[in-house]
Length: 138
Image (cartoon, rainbow, N blue to C red; front, top):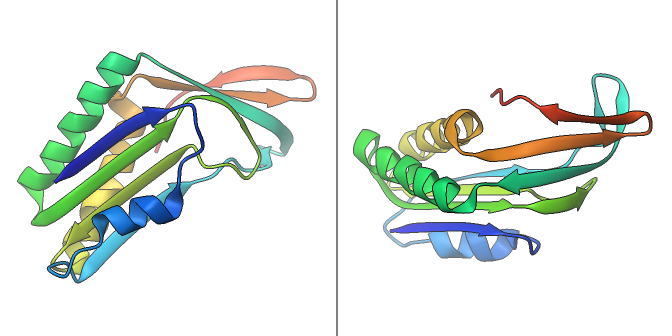
């Protein structure tokens, strides 16, 4: 099962975790990305995320399908925010359920690292003295 979503509304961590829960899965790995308050010693005021939504959804779906091909996983959830986010808010949640923890860990790491490299979602950081578009890097 796969759940993919891009939204301007706040992501619901508990709902995402509940979605991947399954009696058949002994390992659930969850990555929750949060907006931190500093980058390279500079105070972050907020982040802004933009997406080419149609393409981003297709690429996120492809990542989830690749996780099923590479590992023995049973559920994959990828949710990403767009719009303006404040420090402490959650821009991305990835949750993977598998019978065993190793597959869940490996698939989750693969998805977040590859998402940052290939999915057309862009991040802009705002500081007191300006802003910068952030290049993707895991």
